[in-house]
Every structure is written in C-alpha cells, then in structure tokens.
Image (cartoon, rainbow, N blue to C red; front, side, top):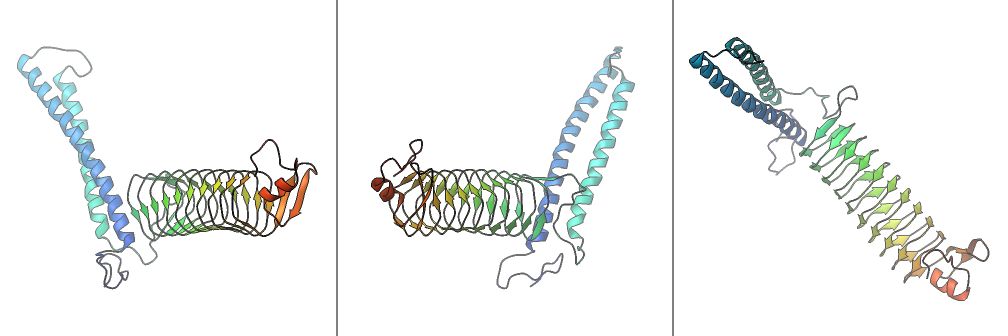
Length: 303
C-alpha cells in the first residue's frame, strides 16, 4: 500500500492512509487555513458593524466630520475590508489545494534558512529536517533536528544536532550537542552538550557536562558531572565534582567531592585535601575518607 499523495510505501498491515510527511504538510496547511478563517470571521463582524453604522447615518443624515463619520468614509473602509477578505479567501483556496499536489521525488519536510523560522504550536513530524525555529508542542517521530528551540513535546526517535531543549519527553535517538534545560530522558545516546536539569531514566552518556538532576539508571562513559543525584547504573570514566551517589558500579574516573552512600568501587582517583591532589584508590570515597581523616574536602559533601 502506498501514500496517495507522494507514492511512498506505507507499513504493511498498518492503518495509515498517508505517509507521515504528507500528514505533517496537510496538518500545517490546515492550521494556516484555520487561522485565516478566524481572521475572516473577525473582519466580517467588523464589516457588519460598519454596514449598520452606514445605515444609521443614511437614516439620520447627520454630518459627522470625524475620521469615519461620513458615508463616503464608511464606504471606503468597507471597500478595504472587502479587498482584504477577498485576499484571505484566495489564500485559503491556495492552501486547500496544495496538499492534493503530488510532491517531487526529492521533496522533504524542511525549513530553508532563507525563510523565517518555523513556529509549530502542535503537530507530528515524520521523516524530515528541522533547521531552525520554535517547536511548541507535538510528537517528533524521526529525522534530523539541526537547530532551534524545543519548548515541549515528545521525541520518539531521530538525531538532535544542536539547539535548546526546554522541556519534554525523550524516548530514543541520538543527541549530539546542545543545551538540555529540563525534562525526562527515557532512553537513547547522549554524545555531547550541556545537561542543566531533569531526570535521566536510562541510556548511554558518552561525553558532555552534567550540571544537575537525577540519574536513575544507565551507562556513563565519560564527561564532567558537576552536581546531582546518581541512583544506579555504571560509571566507566569521567570526573565527578560533587553530588550524591546512592548506588551503582564505579569502574574508573576522578572523584573530587560528594556523598558516597553505597555501591561498588573498582578503581579510581579520589581528591585528598591534605595532599592537594588526586590519589589512586581501590576503595570507595566513603572508605578512603574514613581511613584518612582530614583528606575529605571540608567545603563539600563527602562520605
């Protein structure tokens, strides 16, 4: 079964009538048409009010030299409104007709950098390229995000190249760079960038800066941990500046300060205040500081 608009092959046995890309385009056109219809309704109400006022003036024939106080002025105003309504109706007809046109074989859902950035208030993006703009809400199912601001929504799959994520749910895919401000990361691969706050449920962290938040489970391969709560998972390498380690497996890396509650420490380097340097250790920070009074940094939490 194929999409009746672009001819793309649809999943076998599915209930889709069109491909995700054409659904997205039709949704955008529908949103624009709905906005234009609302504007037309407003203008038609104004036109009716103006007609009523003209009728009143014709009955009373009372001169009123204000901006729109004469019948001629009112008629001119009505003419302008009629012209604008006609233009909007032509635009609606154009939008209604566009989804029925078959896109070229190379067509893709994309935003040109020469055009104003997109602002999407809600919707569904299938397999496309988002270059810039503001995503307010919706479901992202795949494709490549190159830049812009994500305010809220659900990310199912795809590649995030750069941009700012403010809030939402991430279920899978690859994050390459950018700023994550808040939200829930369910699964996927983080390659670089800055995590400011939020909840990490599971996945693989390869590099980057973690400023704060809650890590529930996953694999940490490298990067800088500044603060937050680690509940469980595997730490392979990297630098731990501060925070609370509740449980998990520590394979290697640098521990500067914080609270180690429980878990397995295989090997690493622990900051020793008396030596003003990192010291090689095969025991956890809790054990090391218990064995070496005065070694634990006084200004931060520790074992």
